[in-house]
Image (cartoon, rainbow, N blue to C red; front, side, top):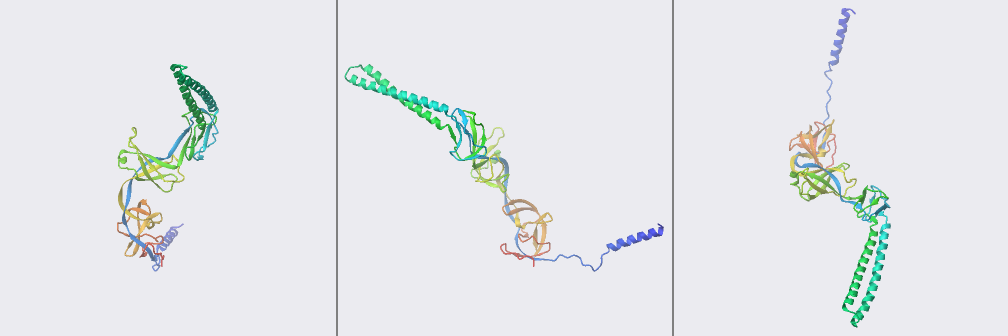
Length: 366
């Protein structure tokens, strides 16, 4: 390519670039069409947020029992399963009663012998009483027979008590649920040897639950029975309000913390052992609060529309805690600013706002 051709080529490129960058003088710029929107307006006000101390805790049952047998014997009829719900009086397991039946037979035999001995002693006593009245026997002989009769009566009482006790042992052969609950653990199997005091299964009442937690001395000093605390648990979308019912004054010697127990309302899908976060109130603080409905999202940025001389201006805000239907504003607006609190999803910067009451039906853009 010649030098002239190169110069011509460069000139054409420069001319094309300049021509592209030059806009027509009479072309109108894009202009936002101002809307007139009726919407409820309110001022940014002060609200209060409780100050909380959050500690870890766990859900525990109010009723939990390790069920054991009062008899020595082999376990049978152990058909309950872990997770099975049982009612009070339901059979949990049985103990082989052969040994108990043998004890009952022995006690019945002893009772019959004592009864026969008493009858024989009574005959002697009646006969010697008559002879003693006739001065046919000495007082020493009569006293001896009287003592034998008294001992025979006491032996019968003891034998009857032994028989009743042996029969009562038979009642303990069938171990029944002491309360409505759920079997959470089996500590033995059918055929194993049960002994008094050795637990066979664990039963919990999951309809009456509490939260147990440990708190430091400074927090424990301000807590009182009847105070409420906010409990958050996995699986529960909303926090649950629990009430303090037990404050253990004795501190743990290792952790130097105190045990606090809180009663839970009847809730579903909460099991014992569930991890909980307990928030205890320790005063409150003041902050700017607005209704949640006042918050709008524009391209991932949260903000509110502030009204100045009837015109809406979008202000980006930094949010804090949420209390009921109110949300904390940490930055972005000033106390006393007029903001749109509803019907704000279609509002754009520069739109004119006609204030209406919250209950009035919004008419939308005109």
